[in-house]
View (spheres, rainbow, N blue to C red):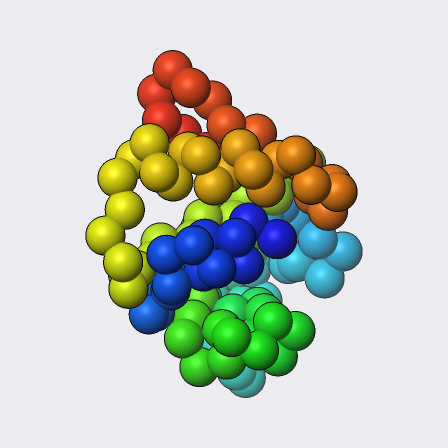
Length: 126
């Protein structure tokens, strides 16, 4: 995975995973009640509130070097087909943009796990 390549080359001290995902089968479309979270009581088309997510903990269990290093936040947005994950990291070693691009391009040469791309024009990872 891309985060593993970044960690192997620069070392990740800590990171924040931001996940944006589309409406799911269990997402409320109308306002209702929730005993757990206020944001779960609102219909998805009316509000987008960040919520905590266990995805960062799950990544730590699957890739042990990240155990306890990542935290996460998620947004459910009123779209039918969308999924974005952003990883912002504090690195052990200093890294220039060109160094990170090189590692990302090396990751792209490996077996595809997910759709990854590097858009050279704006410096955005896609």
